[in-house]
Image (cartoon, rainbow, N blue to C red; front, side, top):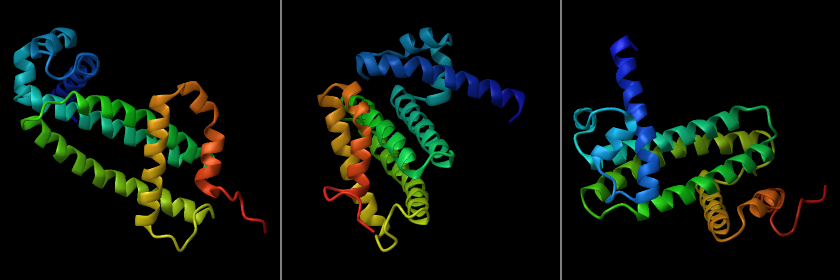
Length: 198
């Protein structure tokens, strides 16, 4: 990346950093490009030059945020922690992210933006699938996931679990949920029966 591209990317990151908290707090409709520009310390023209519309900025900002979350999941998966510990960290982070995204999408208008968000969701699903394939392969390799389970079955199980954890996270004391993560992970791996006796 040359100097010009680096400066441009820094400005884009600046705009994302200013826009995300504004959209999160006030919703898409109530935030203006001028407000974002002021917080990002750039001109409104710069935002329009980079993104074209407020809708495109919002969509790109969300995609950027989701990519960063996925990078964190990758770092967790590549860490030296045990597979159950990695799973716990990923699940907890995913529950928090699901809550954040749900809030974001609820504030989105049903217009051109909803089409952009559908496209983003589709692209992100593909990226997530690559990560999940790696996650399942590692779990099978380390003996935590049955080798004969299909990737689709594991994806359905993990999604079901993640959604319930996200719902529980939203409805109750988050600190309590964090403290009970050991039980969540035990249930994830061993179900109601518990670990098989050898």
